[in-house]
Amino acid sequence: MKEQMHADVERIMLTEAEMQARIKEIAGKLDLIYKDKNPVMVCILKGSIVFFSDLIRNMSAKMELDFMSVSSYGAGTTSGELKIKQDLRTNIEGRDVLVVEDIIDSGNTLYALKKLLNDRKPASLNIITLLDKPERRVAPIVPDYTCFVIEDEFVIGYGLDYAEQYRNLPYVGVLKRSVYEK
Image 1 (tube, one colour):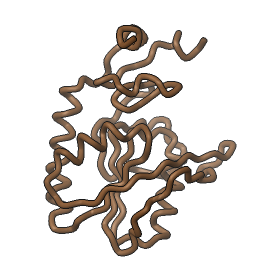
Image 2 (cartoon, helix red, strand yellow):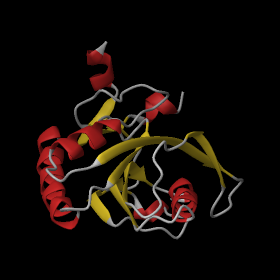
Image 3 (cartoon, one colour):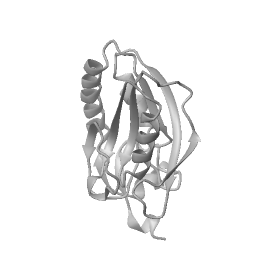
Image 4 (cartoon, one colour):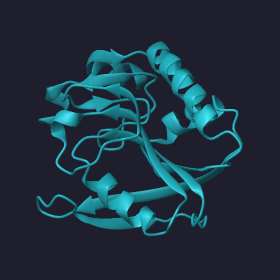
């Protein structure tokens, strides 16, 4: 089965080694920022779970973990309507919060999520993303920390999916058009 997943990849955009090196670098920076702060690290499910796991394992700062599952919809609007499938269990008022996202393209969901979380009055709210596609941005949102800026391609692997498949690939690859244009 895994051979078929690899066969569906047009090219590898980011290798596992490239991602691990960059995540270690970013984790070191975050350790300095969050030293003695005990931040709430928020994983946006499902796509961020692999990145989130590697990021927190490379950090030495004390932290608490929480998870959210969200989506937005809204026929072309810049903010969309946020749908919360799973909310935080942690009260973030007065806390330092770092939202961990897998990819930002249009930015609609993250824009709405940031507004919602800011309404909960955290001491600070920052966003880190593994991948950023700024040329697809519709909503006015910029991540605080970015591992990689990528071109506008349909990417899979390392937590990113197409139809709930390919998340377990150890790299970020470009999915062949023939797979999703069937």
